[in-house]
Image (cartoon, rainbow, N blue to C red):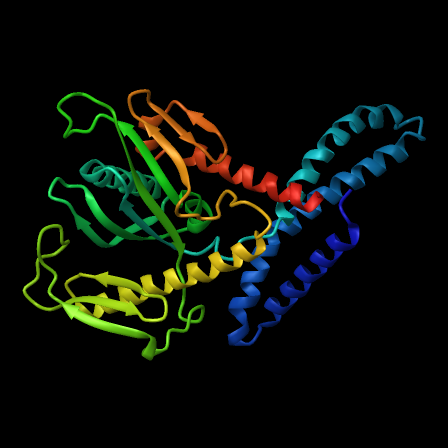
Length: 351
């Protein structure tokens, strides 16, 4: 049984926000009130559904004393009682604490790990997988920085992904992705193992992260040479160094002004991510890293091409649909990771 007083508090808060919105809040309050209202609406809908079943059960039980209605009540009660646990579970899930960054766009950074040219080619395969996934979900993926190898692999890529619930789903992709296959460069037909790292960072706004001018050094340079996204004849590329953290961000688009914007946006995302990681580490000091924690050093998944098999090591899930996954069919994997994460949080709330 869920605590009735907590459900009442949530409903009353929602009704208060609704009244404020209808009354026309001050301009500087609209965004905050609208966001909280939107966050609470699905919870309030689940509360209403849960209370409706409880009310229907109470009415049906009262009808048992009426000879004219008893037969109908006896028919309805088992169905209502069977529906109650499902409604209760749905409400518990709605009440789980939300990651405040879930609704944000994301920066996706992919880099080759161990494995040389083959790792760089696999990094390119991962980028194409995410491009197809973004397209399937109606998201927009924009590559904002990319360096290629001579064989067409990726030395580094940073992409900006916008759309509905981007970070909520892509955050589970952070970590080390391992591939087992026969490289195109291998003449002997031997299976090689290599890896690429993926970092998914929630996009940060200027209000989230204050970067004093004295904390950064901005250098301009010529974007040229093998692997550059553009070969420029002007000094338009920008490199920003964040002195306190040592983080270095570069952008080599054609416009120097645009490069500053991109580099600052990536820098804010990385600093925001550092703050989130620090807070998560403090909360989980007595626990091992969990699903969705974004531990960059954790090997999260193996892509075995000879067997057409993909395994997510965090939840011990193996699927024999590697071709479909590489074509962007990631929902089954991500849905399973979300369900596991929710089950863990429910267990912690009940524990």
